[in-house]
Image (cartoon, rainbow over all chains, first blue to last red; front, side, top):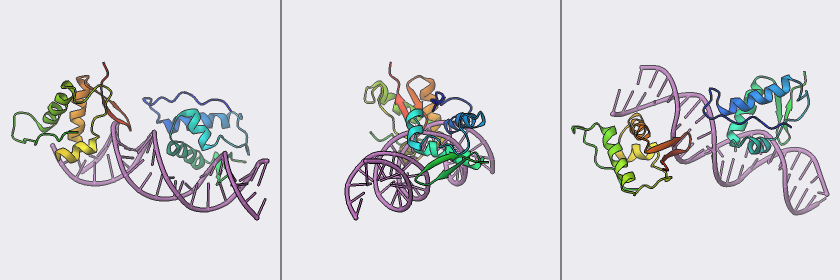
Length: 81
Length: 81
DNA sequence: TCACATTTGTACGTATGTATC
DNA sequence: AGATACATACGTACAAATGTG
């Protein structure tokens, strides 16, 4: 898994959307394929330096977009379509 | 943290400047040292009885003076110089 | 069967940013 | 100056299910 971009706390997009944009790009480019697992909340926290609630907000956004599906105690996966 | 002075709503200085003057004094006297955190907006609201917008006006004044720096979601700190 | 680490779910408290009335 | 609301973010803690050894 690539490293996420540096978080810009002063940019036009809030941190949780910056992470979402990064993951969205990986999915749409095919780097992350349908059925494939995404980094765990912990991994994203460590790689971005953001808090868990912020990462969870990112994942919720991607879920709402239908791009990923989250399985409790398992992880989040790229939606198969 | 000391208690702020009683707010004089009829005095020559508006309330937000009265609070600013108090904090400025603490900083210049060394009671609040560089890098040290200032009371949160909530604490200042409670201890002064003033509204949040007023407290924020106080902090903006101190920021503009270069006496303090505010970190989003963190708090305001005495500028290190 | 058991113990342990991992992972998501949930909740609470605190803090600043922004907007509306 | 004030009141209220919502957005965004950090930290902590605990619960519950899963996977691994």
